[in-house]
Amino acid sequence: MRLGVLDIGSNTVHLLAVDAEPAARPDPAADVGSTVRLMRYLDDDGAINAEGIETLGLAVRKAVKAAGKLGVEEMVGLATSAIREAANGPEVLAHLSELAGVELRVLSGKQEAELTFLAARRWHGWAAGRLLVLDIGGGSLEIAAGLDERPEYAVSVPLGAGRLTRRFLHSDPPSEKEVDALKAYVKKTLAEVADDLAELPPPDHVVATSKTFRSLARLAGQQVAVVGPEERRRMRLADLADWTPRLAKIPAEQRMELPGITPERTYQIVAGAIVAQRAMKALGVEELEICPWALREGVLLRRLDQLAPAS
Image 1 (tube, rainbow, N blue to C red):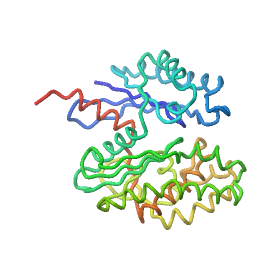
Image 2 (image 1 turned 30 degrees about the horizontal axis):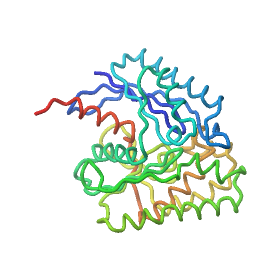
Image 3 (image 1 turned 45 degrees about the vertical axis):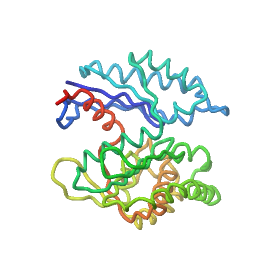
Image 4 (image 1 turned 90 degrees about the vertical axis):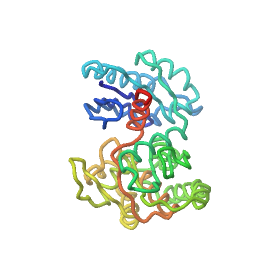
């Protein structure tokens, strides 16, 4: 059957369509996305303004139209941190659900971390041992760790690249004072997470998901030879630490000339790089691997598990 996930995130509205059956590997059919950068549309009270609601509505209509053309038989709708935390989130969610024709489920940060971890576990398999999974979104950073398909530890912290850009990086390129303030905030926010993870056994394999990490790995990482068509990359902390201050000195328009830095990410890639670098340092990660599966795949896998017949 053809399943779809409509994901309303902080940066994009995304439709992922796959051909899938229980106990089978999902086969991607299409990936349709619209950049919204929702943090731009928050007013001083934390509500999504009229322009933002209209932008979201257009993106949802585009995704629904694409789902119809692709023959999606069942669609799962979800919304993440930007909608979850908006002052008018419930009203916006009801409006978008009506446009989508499906009920949009608001995920908690912990649920985001757990579903992303599930996707990484299925992708890397049991041979990867204990996993530590990092995911930088527009509004939050998800971190999860464990040995099984459900992580022993899962947390979401307000360290999304879009959120931090809006709060700290007002200049283009950002000033040294702005960068220093952001670094201090990230370090402080990660301190408790680092203490919690120090109580667990160390991971055997560290992986990162999300467009931000993929962009950074194309810039600062190395491609890995693997079986199959998917590009795989690893990234070392030392290489990221070398690139981060350089990124901060380049204007946003010029960053698009760098490998891996797309137009929709260029304005927030500095904040994303600072979060990635500080997270790797705080958690004692010298190298990580980019995982091509993330939250949307986790949602699909969980739905397929629910459709599987009882043995």
